[in-house]
Amino acid sequence: MVIRGSENPVHIKDNFNIWDFELTKEEMDQIAALNQNKRYYHSALELPEKYVAMVPDVEEQK
Image (cartoon, rainbow, N blue to C red):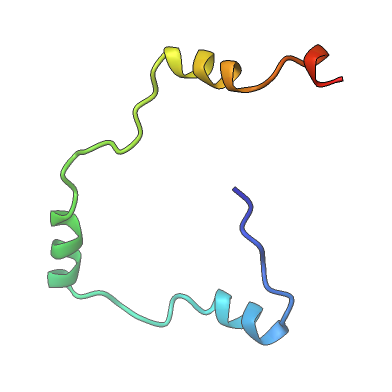
């Protein structure tokens, strides 16, 4: 995925200014509690075969 960057100098400067806050221990604990050790992407060996099947053969596209 491509994430487009800003061309506006003010926006670029604002994007670099991300260290102007500090989290409390309580906030850090809340973030740590979010981890449920769940994976939301599961790769499977059959997936590449399914993707290949979706793309028409090069010779058929001529």
